[in-house]
Each structure stands twice: as C-alpha cells, then as structure tokens.
Amino acid sequence: MTALDASLWNDFLAGNKQVFERIFLAHYDDLFRYGMRLTGDEELVKDCIQNLFQRLWQRRKALEAIAEIKPYLFAALRHHITDELRAQKRRSALQSDYPGEVELTVQHSPEDFLIAQQLTSEQQALLLGALQQLSNRHREALYLKFFDGLAYDRIAEVMELNQQSVRNLVHQAIKRLRQVLPYPLLLLLNGFFLNFLL
Figure (cartoon, rainbow, N blue to C red):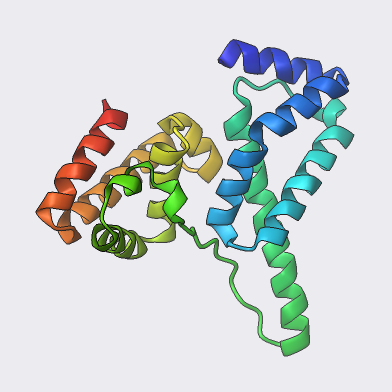
C-alpha cells in the first residue's frame, strides 16, 4: 500500500481535489475512532478532523512526500487535538486563574475490541477494567498496534517516540494485562495478540 499511498499523496500535493476527497473518505472513520479514543469529545474530534483537512489543502504546496498516509494523518490529528485542548485550557485558565496540564486520555469502546463479541459481559468488564489500569501511553500504543494495525515504526511516528520505546510500551502493557487478568481470559487474548505479534 506504500506505493499507492505515495502516488495518492503526490496527486493530492499536485492539487487533485478528487484524490483529496478520496483520502478524506478513506481515512475519516479511522481518524474519528482514534480521535474519540484520545479525547472522547465527539464535536471536538469532528472539528479537528475538518480543520486538519482544511489546513492540509491550504498548505499542500508546502507539504512533502510521504510513504504512508494513515500514520501521517494520525500524528497530525493527535497534534491538532492536543493544540485545541491546550487552547481550551488557556481559555479556561484565563477564566479561573488555574493553568492546567493537557493530557490526552485514551478512551475505549466495546466496538474497538474485535474479540469482545466472543467474551461474556463479565469478561468484557474484566478486560475493560484491566485496560483502565494501564497508563494513557500504554493504552494508546496497544490501540494503535492491535486495533488500528499500525507497525511499530508508524506508531513511533504518531506518538513521537522512538521505535524501541513503542515496543517497550506494548510489551509492558501486555505484561500488565497478564498480571491482572484471570487465566481463561488470558488464553483468549493470547491468541488475539499472538496473531498480531507474529
């Protein structure tokens, strides 16, 4: 898909509106799900995606060629959401005189878990509880790897980390899940994770 992505991106950079729309439509759902995991604010996510694509179109002549579109868009959306949350914090701080840190909180929904359809409601509750015990960075790395299907190098781009740090985050998250989940549920998840890790 890299060659196709590169070709589509180059056509977009050349000003092809149909290709731009194709890129938007092809990636909107994934971007929306990723944005919802980061913030949980549907309107904010929709606005950020819209603004992201408007900025891409306006600045296309200054953009460079890329190998893969999805990781590039994920990273750009992550930056855009972070910037918007910072702006909201500044506005809020001006009103309350309390500046706060901006932290993306990775949200999850049952639809994100392909395996969840096979789990009982008790098992789903255990899994969701275990995921909540992970840090936001660990959850984000897991989601990008197992649910968005990104390679470690692409996750590193999105999260602005080096590739080994991403591997460590995923490994630590899986290790933590193994510590807190009951054995039968681990057997189900091990098969799921092994499919992606091999």
